[in-house]
Length: 324
Length: 305
Image (cartoon, rainbow over all chains, first blue to last red; front, side):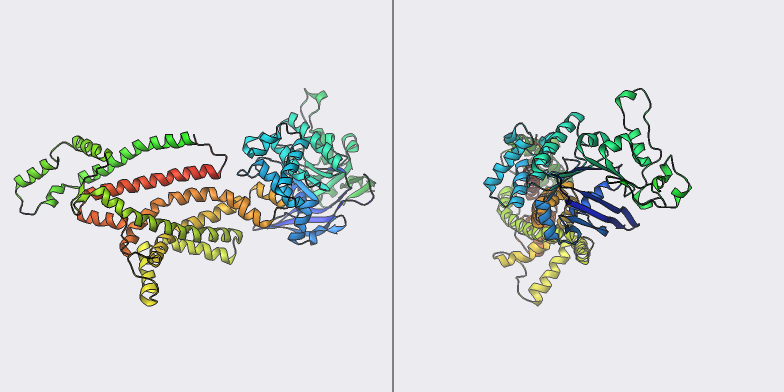
């Protein structure tokens, strides 16, 4: 499963939105890579640039947004240079996506069967009959108990968990190399969350599909992934293995995030929070983007923008505290 | 669904009753038809006699219920200018108006939907500005002016289409364009905004991320959803269509219901006015009813109860 050649390499990616009120630098100088079959999380609060990163990889950043810098190498092929048609081929066969809100992500006027069959036909170039058979196979794979009924249902007739299973079936039916899951369980009940995560994990193992898991839920991270990247203010501020992040978070922001996660042992204590609010990408602070909220900030933080520092092979942090 | 249709049809009855009541009251309070029907030198006695013969000396509610019971039997009274049952005359004119209405709708939808989609896809471009500007002009332009201009250009100057009358498809072209343009403008604007809204929906993003080709995304996923409000508004435009038909039929001497109604109003032929309004009301109600059913067919989330 492990190979030296990464599946996806994002290099110095910057996506900006050119609005009437000026340029909004949603993500800046993002660099990371994902190995084949690896499950990586991208963690951050709303507005930190997680979704823009995923849409950039999908090639679906819409005007006025634009990738202004950087490369996205997928199997050594630079996606940012592709035409719409060629990108279409990548989206059909190699990279899939599951979205946060499965109700609005499915077309309300088409049945589940229509969605699946349509997707399978364009992705696998099979006949309608074959596509239908594959669709049923996938409904079973994502553990939908009554495939026949669900096939004929419309999105609004299903529960959130069922809809998300359908989304996963649509995304994985082409056996993609990479699945981008953008907060796939945020809109679901906790019990359903677990089931959906299990389905995703099992199927990705089976298909050897890598997953870029976008979430703000650290519980989900602990459950699912091998490696975590923490985003803040449109930048990656820390990369680390899950274990390391939970035991010894390096960046003050990661530390804050972990402290503000409820734990069973401390049920009667007041939960820690990170003071202040996520800065708007249109109005980012100078220097370190986190300094206005950082408990460990010192004078240099307000003016000097830290670069990503390699602590060891799998651990990087963007903080002046770690400058040697 | 069939129980829904049945219930809707039953609900129609009180609506029809109210319409008949309103039309009858308007005509009743508009003035005494006897004075118009008799020559100017008629004596008071003649007038009283005529009133008694027509039941006009009875109180309003008795007159109304007599009228109502006749209407239930399909009798709207006789037209005094045609000396025939009013309903027969109205029904005889109806096909011409329906023909014009359908032709106008084809013109309206045929222009509006492609233009609306096109301007939505080219949002904020020069094309969009032209189309949107054009729809404003189309909507602001009065029917009678457009009709006369079309006659001037195509019939008088270019002599390629007949000025007025009926009989061939060529006769239908100018009235249909005249009547269809205003309606078309409204549908085009709605199609545009509806398309823009659906193109921004999450499911369009899903379709894109699944590699569905652009044509299907626009014409299957987005258009199918944008169609829902468009169909509703189009069916509701029947009102505007009939209002416009009154003017258009007069301009082009189109022998339809509109022309008949205007002539009847001029002649104070109240039986025809009442029968016409009744038929028009039924058409409008039916079209709204059809809109509801289409709505259900287009959107599986709608439950008709």
